[in-house]
Image 1 (cartoon, rainbow, N blue to C red):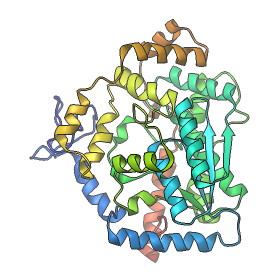
Image 2: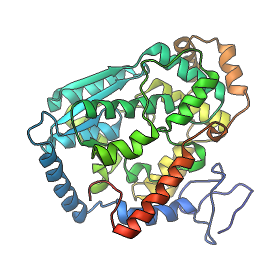
Image 3: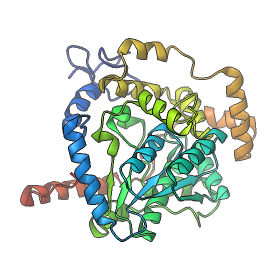
Image 4: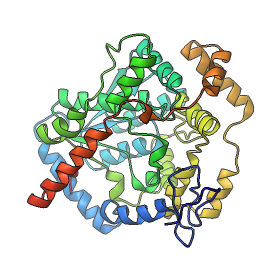
Length: 382
């Protein structure tokens, strides 16, 4: 493969050298496009075969949940993916425990969308409100650390809450709106996994100012061994078993529940909006529209020319940006000058702090050996 230190953009998608690890073949096609082609063969089934596979999985979920109040856990953020999944779960006749995690950044529109979906589907909604003082302290710790993955405090508590609710209610199946059609491309060097509690605690230990008494994390042992192998819990991604088109999904949500779209991807969170559209591009040069649009290109939902046009659009209206920064500072109780200092402070990699990457490599080596000896696959329902 050819590595080029000068600026270069993929001839097939829109990923470029803002991903420092990107490589290109002799035709200028990047490694993300090639990887999607390989991964999609075993994990993406937008066809009749996928429908048949998913039908079998539904029956397994119903059988595992027989006699229980709920047969699966569904996290509902108010975004398109989880919202669309919520109305599909109703169509499939499943009985989800619907969980929303309020980390303090919900937009009013997100709250309205969640209420509309829950009312339409007749679901019981369980909302976990995160201790704001602890959340604020964790946010500030991450900002002081100067790393790119500022969304970890939100993402980790979202997933840990789902697992804790599942364990409490003896539910074996976790429903995820994650999918290859809209998320199949992402540069690994941009940040690590949100589930790395070792990394989270290390950053907070260095830069935080108070103990995390109510913010419940998930350990490496719990996430990779206890939940999947001892408790027999599995995460399933239904959107990978259907021809998931985000624009069509949005239209169906509008028609079905009166869903109101956001101006930006992840606009359901006021934190994520500023993080993705200002913090990352300005401080790190990462435009998260690129992997998102690249995903739509490789999954056949968008042309490269249309994606390039979208990238020409400004990330923020300047007046709205100032309003969002003011709200952000007020919420975190910092001054604008403190915010500017954080934006201009030196950047760090998440790997500058302890991680669970070494443990993960050992675990995957053990799994490969076991798989070779026994033929056992380590995956979700198949």
